[in-house]
Length: 151
Image (cartoon, rainbow, N blue to C red; front, top):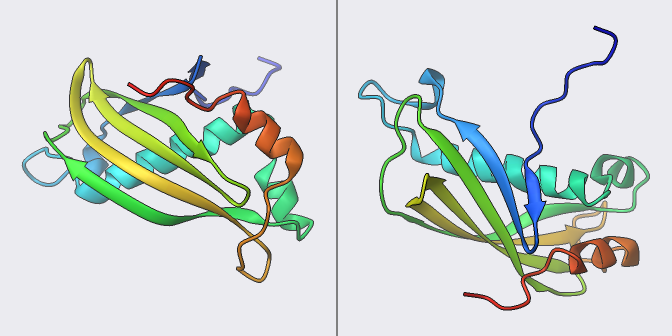
């Protein structure tokens, strides 16, 4: 095999990103229920891959001193537990794009069953940790993904 295998990045369908996750034994407690903190981890992975799919190279921007995204707000509502070996989908929608931030709603689903909903604000920060305008090319990329008609 000449090509290096790549992990799944999910897919952008219209104004939503769908990212697959499996609940591994390491994600659970003794009873097989996923730890609450793993929901944040799974959603972070999905948001990182959204950037990758939109052509945004956050690592290069950080290394060049241009800035980076960081979560500035998070609001989580857990509804049902994820369990060992469940196949989940992290559904992400960008609901608001501002000059220095993006607001997203992330839903953790097992099939059509809603397990958790997370509202996140990701701020774009300078290398000194202060808010700054997102690069215009990044805002343009996000604009192709932003939800036009929220449900």
